Amino acid sequence: MNIYIKGIEDERFLRPLHRISDLFFEESNVSFEDDNEAQLKVEVELKVHEEIYAKAVLHDAETDKVFTEELAKSFTPYETEKEKFKQIKNVVLRVYLSVLQEYTSIVQKWGILTGIRPTKLLHMKLQSGKSKEQAHRELKEEYLITDDKINLMQHIVDRQLAAIPDLHELKNEVSIYIGIPFCPTKCAYCTFPAYAINGRQGSVTSFLGGLHYEMREVGKWLKDNNVKITTVYYGGGTPTSITAEEMDMLYEEMYESFPDVQNIREITVEAGRPDTITEEKLAVLNKWNIDRISVNPQSYIQETLKAIGRHHTVEETIDKFHLSRKMGMNNINMDLIIGLPNEGVEEFQHTLDESKKLLPESLTVHTLSFKRASEMTQNKRKYKVADRYEIGKMMDLATEWTQEQGYEPYYLYRQKNILGNLENVGYSFPGQESLYNIMIMEEKQTIIGLGCGASSKFVHPETGIITRFANPKDPKSYNDGFEHYTQEKLKILDELFRK
Image 1: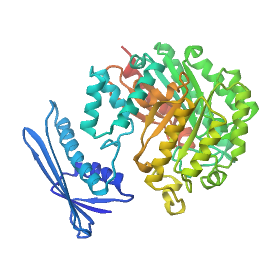
Image 2: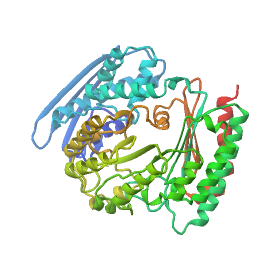
Image 3: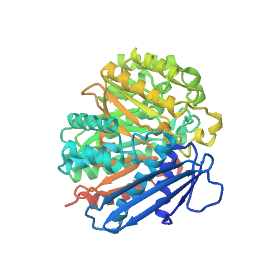
Image 4: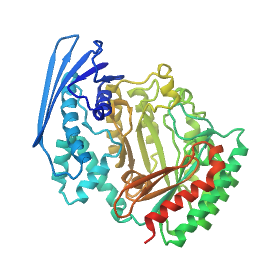
């Protein structure tokens, strides 16, 4: 869909207007220049004085129909030009979204909100002293979020505070993310730093040497500065791709290097690929008192697993789940994905039916996102996916099914290019929430990323300002520079935590 927007020349509006357009059309091209090929022409009138006034008039070149929306809003107090522009942009986006909703008859339940952390926004409003009613009203007015999504956000915020009552007081602690960049194969939808492990043992050995160094140095800094660890999460890739012996040495390093490991609230190992789980590896997890893992089916349709590049069977997922349970894994998470190639409501219902036979402690329902660098995005024509209406039905199925099984939503995030403009929701039985998932989503504390491709997010304990720092994504670059990257992270930690 080619869209010509007339009346605005400030390039700062172009990207957010494009994002709103993408919510309605599979492929949109937004321009401030008329090339006479636009199917839609949207004329925006913008006046800024004591208040902000915006009017959007949409003209469909094919049908000659015209749709109009307008909005006037007073400024709230601001200190910088950036804050002033943000308010102006908000009004323009609201009239633009409203006129596209009228034109398409598609209601965007998340309104103009395209950020990935909606619940963080609600946390901030409530923390500032606003009542739930006032916070909800502002979300509805400022972002055009619908009541059902606001209620979902509130439900999740309540669950998070029940799981971590001191969530807002953990700014002087940290969590640790440890990235293991290897998998048996790479999934078609994946953009994580993940490399097929077969034939790369040399790289694995070198990588683990660098990771052990990072763990020792960061652990020493935490001990020296009396900084506690809230949670540890082993992700990737697939952390169980390495051998049982390598896993054993890694967890031994954790216990020797990190402070007060016995009192870390949660340690998770993402054993996401069932074909990497063995009795020997589970015994290693037991040895180090780790009982929270992920075993991820994604789908219980064998043809789907083959299409997306997962080389395990449905039966293997079920068998490894039972083996994990038998070996003492008491908090198992499973991931499901809505909208995988050639799957519709019937196939997703089958996946839910199979999940009911297992009932893991937590379940994350993802909506497929076409990430720019993934194989699936590079070859879109090869992967047929459901339309937005069927995607919505599948999400409704997931919502109803989780309620019926006694699961509660406890974290939520959104992504660019997500099918149906929906969301990813983590569900759990009460008391079985992933604390790390809450910490990473709500950005209340520093999360230190160790390992290849691991991203650190340093949150200033006083101002909340976030500084990001990423390790290299490929093992060779990581192996060549892990000492430098470790020291750079320690410098940032010094600036944040040393009194």
